[in-house]
Length: 318
Image: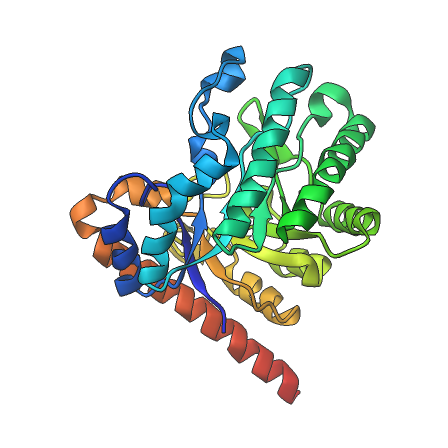
């Protein structure tokens, strides 16, 4: 049975008020979360190369710090369905920072194992504009290949994600937004690993910004899809809001082809979590109405899962 999941960013942290909030998620209808451990990375690292805090602790201390977080989640029956690692994964011309980022990924794999989480999303390097396509491909293969031993050690599957870039307010394709390229990346990396160590996190909002055909995109990726980032936008900005939020032509047409997405997931018989990356909605709604807001979001997740099952049944009866 598919899990109904939501990202932790915008909802809870692992150091304040989490017991009550995990219970709120359970009551709303969720049984899994996408843990945004990436929120622990201090952004000043990318400005001046300085850093302190969470990722500078030894992994033993990090896991000890997370112990009450894990216990609280499990007490409420909430699983860690996927984990979002630190990003960006690579900064052109900054080898010291890149080495540090790789270390955070390795620690995230250990965290994922501790939380009994199989799938870890690691963004590909998006440096084609600065360095060209061939160099970007080389960097990504090297970046992910370096992580294979730790991924195997901790029993995690690394998920690549479809990205975009912005130029003069225009959204253009970035690494893994060409889904045949993305499939090729995963197959090449799994061949290097010798095991199925890599999969894909299909980001619906990113695909919508770039005008992708949802059903066809999912079909191309096929069983490589192990995780989802489900969220809506106006096909121009990466808003990270609830599905079915945006419409065109005075409400007559949805901005995102949700039915195409669900039919695509049925085509490939997707059984992973229906996971929402909707932190902006959580930031926008007042906290007193978060229980009702989350109940609606969980209901949408169950509807989506039921629709996928319905399409699978209909296809099998043809």
